[in-house]
Image (cartoon, rainbow, N blue to C red; front, side):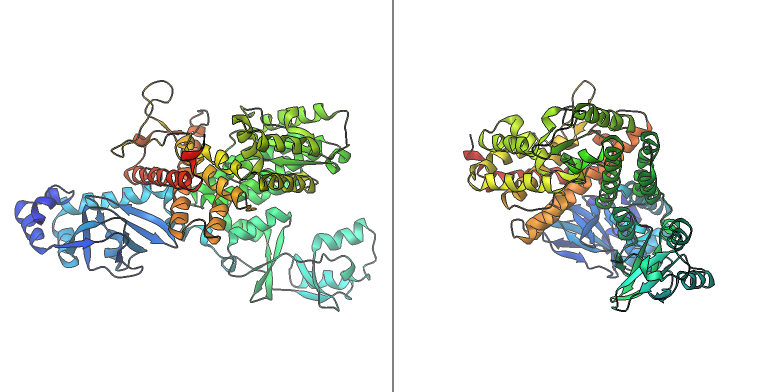
Length: 607
C-alpha cells in the first residue's frame, strides 16, 4: 500500500504542502493488527502517531471503553504528547494503520501550523464532545474520590461507664461532634452532641448517668479506601449523618455528613434529610423538585449513570415511603406493602418519566377509605412532577391495589393463561422493589411466582419473545433509520430500538435462572458469574446499555431545559462523531444479542 495517496485524503495531512507530504509518506510505516490484538498497553510510551486507514480501535481503562477511533482518525495524540497511553488500545477488527514516528510528528507540530491547529482542535472537540460517555474524565471527578480524600475526624473514645458530663467535656475539649463509646464486652457504639443534649434536656437524665445507656450500637462502617460516593449512598440509605471509617478493620475515625457534603459540593444528602423531616406534602414537594438539580450536578461531574441511578432510587424510595406515611394511617402501612416496578424497580429511572407502583394488602385486611388514599397518593406524585403512567399502572388503579391472594391469582393467570398484556404485567411486576410497609408480602408474591414457573418451562421462551419485537434502527449499510415525517422526523427511539431489547433479554435470562437482582447491570454480572453470558458478551451488553442510557439522560436534560416533553427519541445528526459511532456500535451489539436470545430460547420455534 502506498502511504502518500492515503495521507493526502486524511485531515490534517491533506493540508500539507506537497514536499512536506512526500517527506511524511517516506517516514511512515504500514502496520497491520488482527482483531483483539493490543496496539498499545496501558501506560506504554508510544513512539508513533497512528493514522487509521482501515478498521477501528478502542481505548480501555478500568475495564471500560473511554475512546474509539475509526478510519481517517489519528490516535493517540494525548498519549504521544504525555509519553504514556491512558489505557490499553485494542483493535476492534482487522485494522490497518500508518505509523508516523514521533520525531516527524513533533517536526510537523513545530513547523506546520496548518497541520497542528486542526489536530489540536479535533482533540479538544473529541474530549468535550465525549464527556457524557467518557469514563476516563471521571479520574478528576468525585466518583473516584476515596473516603481517605475527605476529612475523617480522629476517633474520640470513652468507656460506656463514663458519665454524660464526662462525655460532653471530652467532646468540648476535642471540638468533636460525636464520640465512640466502648462497652466492657468490647462492642462499640456512637453518641453525638445531640444525643447528649436530648438525654439531659428532653429526657431529664442525670449528667452523672452512664453515657453507654444513650449510645447507639450496631455501627455502620466503611473502609477508608472505599469510595466517597458509597459513603453518601450509605448515609442516604440508613438515614444517618455519620459513618465510622476503618482501615484494615481497625477504626480510623468518623466521617461526618457536613465534611462529605463540603467535599462533594452537592445537596443530595440534604434532600434526604428534607424528605425525612417533611411534615406535609408541600414540604415533601420542595424536596422532590430538587432531585433534577442533583441529577444535573452528578451528571455534570461525570458520575457513572449506574451510581446516579442507585442514589436517585434511594431518594425516590424515601420520597414515596414518606408520602405514603403522610397519607396512609399506620394500620394500613402495617398491613400493606408499597412497591415500585418497571424501571423504578430496576433503579434505572433517573428522570421523572412516569409512575409504576402497586400496593399489596394482607389477605383478610380491608380499609374503608382505601380508594381515597390511593387516589391522593397518585395525585400527589403528579404534583411532585411524576407523570401518570400511560398504562395506568398505579396504586389508584384497583387492578394494582389488592390483597396478596388476588395478586397470586393474577400471577397464575399471567403464567398459565399468557397474553400480550399478561406478559407486560408480568415483566413489570417481576422487577418490583419494596418501598414501604411489610416487605414480606412482596417476598411471598415472588416466591409464588417462581413456584408457578417450575412446572411451566415453556413460559420462558414466550416471555423472551418481546426482546425481538422492535426493529433495531440500523440499516443494511449500518446507517441510522430515523422517522421520515411527523413529530419525530429525523429521530430514532432509543428505548424501543436499543434499551428495551437489552433490558428485557437480560430480564428473561434472569427469570430463567431465578436471579434475585432487579437492576439490569447487576443481572448481567450475575449471569456472567453463572456462565450464562461470556465475559466478552457481558462487557458488550454493559457498555451498550450504559452508552444508550447515558445518551437518553443527556438528551432528556437538554429537552427539560428547553421546556420540551420527556421522551426516548434522539436525533443522530445532533450527536458528535464519537457519540454516533458509539451508538452505531451499541445497536450492533443489540442485534447480536437478539440473535443470542433467539437461539437460546429457540424463538424460531415459538408460535
